[in-house]
Length: 102
Image (cartoon, rainbow, N blue to C red):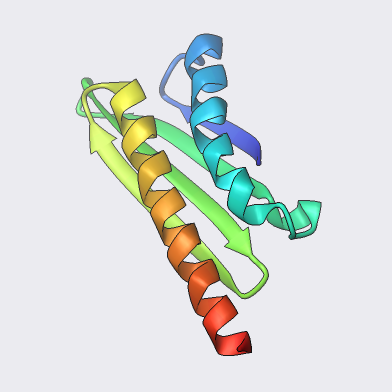
């Protein structure tokens, strides 16, 4: 999945960004049959209260757009949890699409 990052009030960290892309790429195995336009996500990283990170992900599928948010003190944990949520949602959504086509 192609991921576009926006860092607001947080110093950009190339290492974390690469790691996050790797985490989010797990979703690609479900999106392989879709056009490249539907295999992208938009990530926004902000810092709240000086010590809490808020990471949000917006992704599109041909039939739906979804938004995920994770808040925490550890940036990598936020990305990991966000990736897991997005992967579960994608898998469920695609299963429902397959069922409706049957």
